[in-house]
Image (cartoon, rainbow, N blue to C red; front, top):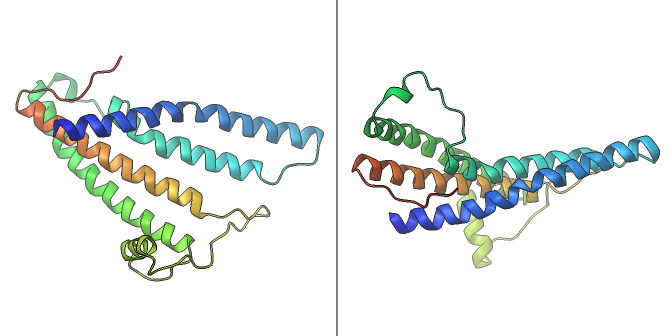
Length: 190
């Protein structure tokens, strides 16, 4: 458990730190959008690209947010509980989060497979087939806007983000189990 927690936390920490800079990319896109609409011909790509950047920033930064405990929490009674009781409650609620993220990840796989031209109902088999060469990419889904970008890159990023959040939630579950046993695992960061 300790090795899993260290590896997953390290990966999500680094990705989260990189994603913090994504805010500036999004601001740059929106700034260019304002400038181009004011002084030049409006760019078709700016609004949708800003939406894609926001999704990337939010989804890929989610595991980092879970790791730091900066997610929103209803703290009506929680702050008065002992550390062990908090760990029990956190372990229970993170199990619900793991279930939810598992459903989101499976839905993300299906949606990404659809964007790659797969019309079937078994997305895991499709991606396995892509790796082994028994499946191939079909007609790629495009946005219905005037810019018409391909959708598979953002859906892939969303699916990867769900997967990383799922890994981080499992890491948090392991940390809660260790706290219940009176131990502490994971790296404390300043």
